[in-house]
Image 1 (cartoon, helix red, strand yellow):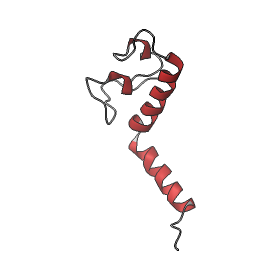
Image 2: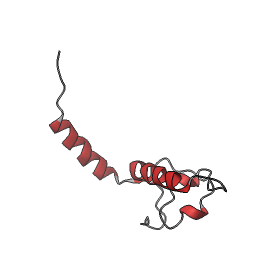
Image 3: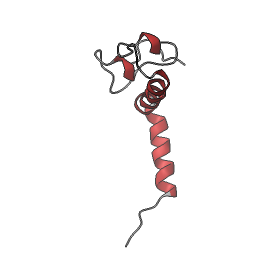
Image 4: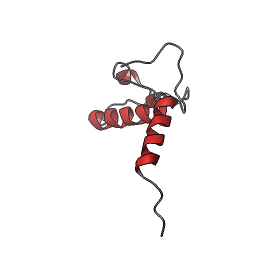
Length: 75
């Protein structure tokens, strides 16, 4: 999985590369270190990547769908 060249996910910064790391580049991430729990770090990384770098349209569609199926509950 990769991103288009020159595309910067929202929330990404030059000092925190692990937030934009994907399958191919995770091992060279600046936050990877000896003794790190790789499976957990990788899974969390994918979660962070998916929630921050997903196209805005996908989030809008999800939000609209969620709103339709979860109306406000009055008391």
